[in-house]
Image 1 (cartoon, rainbow, N blue to C red):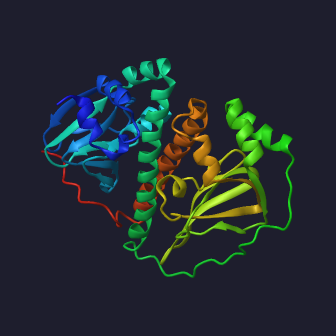
Image 2: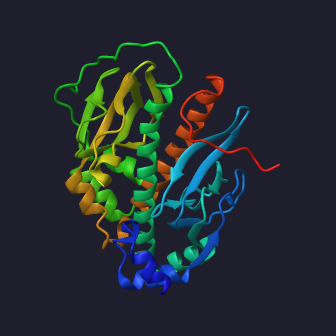
Length: 334
């Protein structure tokens, strides 16, 4: 069976055309690894990405209390794409948990192909965005499990006003300048400038809550926005602070799940531009090559948040003295 036929089996590549699957297969290799094999190691500067065809992979990081497991990945899952997207060294080890078959994606071959074929680049980054967003959502969910085992004292859920501040208007030139700063294509700039809506929030006003449905994403125009998660027994944990040009709320639009965290204006308030699901779907149409710039920005954004959140979890694990959620990690061989 050709690699393109193997790749066709997995949902992550369901949007690829037959030709693009053949192209992807030409950049791939298939290998088997016994249990306990290190596929990548923390600190490496490699950028290969991998699809798990069978078996499993654990993502782990070394701490003073031993290895902490950040994720357990199963067949059909991509990993290693974070370093391909942001070119940052590996932030953890990837170790096989059983006999495992992987399809490796060669970064040099992929990069060369993307330069020649923008439509292939668009399809590939769509796959990476879906994969990274899924991992970020799972990591957000793991926070609740982590804190439920660290014995922190209970605290009350914060309450904040929900309404944005009355009538508010931002001129088109200010919107256009924001999107020009991000070096978007002319089509993207015109689309977002014209179709985004502005909202103003006062200090600590809630933009959305975890668990709510989401049909909008946002970009910060002025002020700061805090992304946080309320964790029973731990209180409100800040996950990220976003400033001008920062996008948020996009995950619910790509996977149609509920919000995985809270978003609210930080001290001093915030002005945000609202991009509806219909507008995002229009600008990120898989057939519109001119949307590549926005998609790469979103991929880098999610990759950065995933790294930051993993760092936070490791920090909390160390502060907790090595307690908290973690899949079992066997000791290294003697």
